[in-house]
Amino acid sequence: VTLDVVTGAFSFTGRHIAQALLDRGRNVRTLVRRPAPSGHPLADKVEARPLVFDDSLTESLRGADTLYNTYWVRFERGSTTFDRALANTEVLFRAARAAGVRRVVHISVANSDAGSPFAYLRGKAATEEALRDSGLSHAIVRPTLVFGPGDVLVNNIAWALRHVPVFLIAGDGRDEVQPVSVFDDARICVETGERTDDVAVDAAGPERFAFEDFVRVIARATGGRALIRHAPPNVVLLSSRVAGVFLRDVILTRDELGMLQTGLLASHEPPLGRDSFESWVSESGKGLGRRYASDLRRHFRS
Image (cartoon, rainbow, N blue to C red; front, side):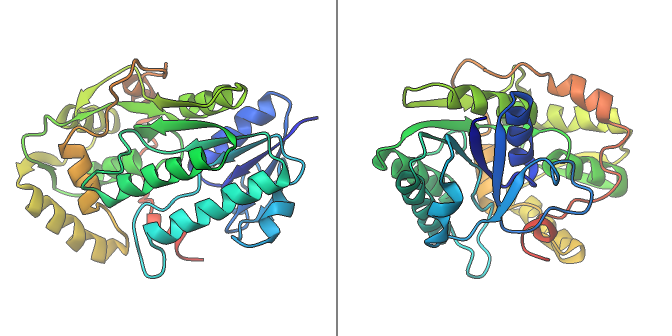
């Protein structure tokens, strides 16, 4: 049975890629920075090895047909920087080549750009360039805004709509988003993994929303009663930082707000996603936002 390797199969995107591979009858090994949480549905279905960026990576990748790489960082914190994440990614690609991996599927982001004013997008573009320079057969998948069971963004918007009196939207709220389901994202990754040509594709859903409409869809589905109001971007950023102190989390970064306001959470390509965000959130609304999901707790705290 063919073996594939997925980085982060106990996290959000990686979990669904791993499950899609298992559903196709493939064996899955995962490289992870932390053990599986108690009761994780994939804990007994995949082989887990540590994701450490040293010489042991080559052995961890040996025997794999395809590497699905979800590794990246959402924001810089302490020694965790975009430059360090890029260097780690380059180590991973070199190890894949040394191990004889046939193909790499690399999860990037829509509108990655080496000349972007946003460090997040510049970093993602640099990882794509590193993969192209590696000589490996590859696919680059660039999702827009990913939603689905276990996500952070939609859940925390729902949490705020349930628990705070006022939900602030930066500017006029007409900034466009094009959400894609994590199931579609995983399917697109696996489908491009089965190809042999070097390719870069966007993973975007079939619906496009003004951000205010996106928030109101979530509010209707969850019964959230927060007043939705507009504010200058700097006020929204400041209020998110103040809330982050109390929640002990990073709620919104300057790059994320800038990417939203410049339309970079939507794709310019025909959508490859099929799942409706509005349908999913309507079906899932009762459970969304019941508990706050901390990104810092998931990725930086044991």
